[in-house]
Length: 379
Image (cartoon, rainbow, N blue to C red):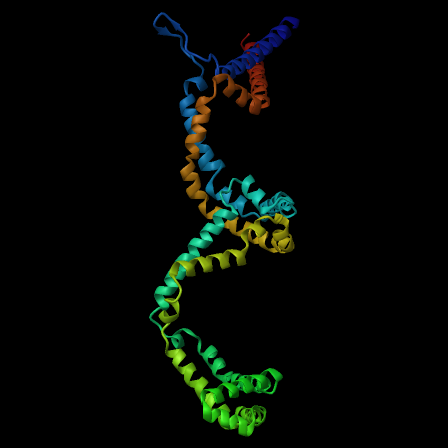
């Protein structure tokens, strides 16, 4: 009876050993040997191992698997459009951009840091070029036009409305002048000159009336003449007529009085001084950005991230096609040594391979038990 038990146990152990060793050997033969061995011209069977022998096919299949099942356009689009992902991108960009909004570096220093070829000298050059082109274009467009064709109707109406005010202004200024000591003295000088030009008759008239009395009598009459409604009407009609003539004047009459080069240089100098680019670029970047910081981070940045991820989502299929992801994976796998491939596979599946070995031993032991039972019945 003891001999039967020992035989039965021996068959179980042998079966388990064979099953375990066979599975372990089969796993090893997936990778080893790494290269083919020959006896003369005869290649030893099962060399190299399965994976080294089919590495090209493995690389190709891995590339297809990654593109078709793992990293697909749909999975990437779903990830990009995920709300949590967008929030993470927004938070990351906020952290990266906040130091920029509080930076003490000037705009010029930032342009130099970012290697952007922009300076106040270059910007002023562009501004001057733009001004020169605009002056020439404007001159070409408006030279043949009349002043009334260029001025807006509202401006023309305003000018005509101010003609009575101009008449009153001229009358008031003239009255103030002729009633002033300076005006009185000027009237006396004019009367003296008038009498001198008349020769003997003027001298006799002057001696008869006296120069001072003539000036005193004429000066109030001049003031009355200025204040008279008829005088103001004449002045109003005169200004209205001159304004009508001025509106019919072609702009070339004004433009041609200034040489084009002088006009361009004047506009350029005024524009450069007005814009003052150098002063703007010399200020810290925070001077321009900080007033808009809250609006940017709370409103604009989330909108930009949303639009950016939406655009990226639409472009993902085309980007993946352009990247040739399958070819990249295939080339990377083909570049791995067999040792590296073995390390990768075992690193992922070492535990499962051990379980396969143990399963082989278990099945071998079961087969040994079955064989022992059969042997007992036969004997």
